[in-house]
Image (cartoon, rainbow, N blue to C red; front, side, top):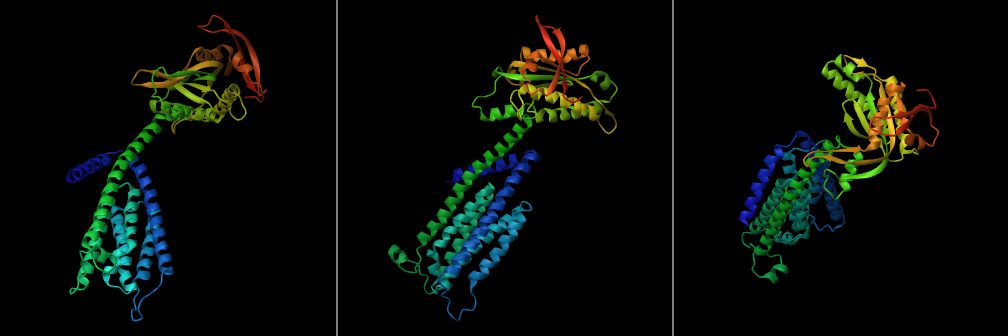
Length: 452
């Protein structure tokens, strides 16, 4: 047994050292979990004291008339006050370690004082209380500390419980020096107020073993908790680089994401590009350029989100987005066109930059609809999620054709044909031959039912 215990203690020390090196935000998340656990412990303590009080109220009172002091109500009252303080404090912040150790000692003191008082309440010799089933509550108090995922608190609980029971045994043996009441007869032990040391040490051994088993389980669980918090943080960070829908799919997927994992689906693809941003950025300091772009991207993303759009890529000052699901009664094509109109409305009202410089931005938008291939691309070590295919290429070309037609939004025939709600006015711009395609493409500018 010594070797496994010593190995576990070494592992605990290593994990504690590793835990101390964790980033602050990981510590904060673990502490929030610990705060919830401490609150649960306080509620359990309150439940225990209420249970004890109810049992005491219902049990027969056999105190002799000459006994002026009844210890149980005082013990329960003191414990109730302490529990209320603990409950209040735990809902404000995570208690310091010294308070937790003190709380453990109070827990054990409560149960042992109650057990000790039984021989007075029932007018029996002290050995009477050693057979009280109330000792089982000790295991509840030990198990309760497993909620904190802290091995040290479980081990301390087991140590206090073991030492406390030793004191209870010592008190029985020393209560009457003329008669220690120790016996080796098991039957006599069960049928009298005698003491069987082997039985009492069995209880202590059980307390120790339960504490060690719980500690081992919590030690493993603690490692999993820290790892899960770290992985959750990483997942949240990576979610900034891929669409939320892709993150949700990865959570449900049984396969590891690999380059080439892709599927074909129908979508409306939007390509946007800021007008003359190169010229604008040449006049601005780098930090203002970054602030301008970030503000613009944030504002556009908010509009896209409101119509179920997914940003697949940022390319310089350009955005590649896709709409592949109906949203609020609108088809993907209608969502894309309405989002494009709302982006233009937003840009007409909003300026971007920092505290030193603000500017208006314009953007050209191209929208096409059809079958796209969405999936992971890259190497074995680094991947990006994007959509690609001829539909995407045409959306990018349509965005560029806005220069030629002096328009802000251009859509393809495929997109126009899937807009059934008559929310928009599509103005034919004729046939346009797009670079890279052998066939001409019908092009439409778009206007809302109200002027942009």
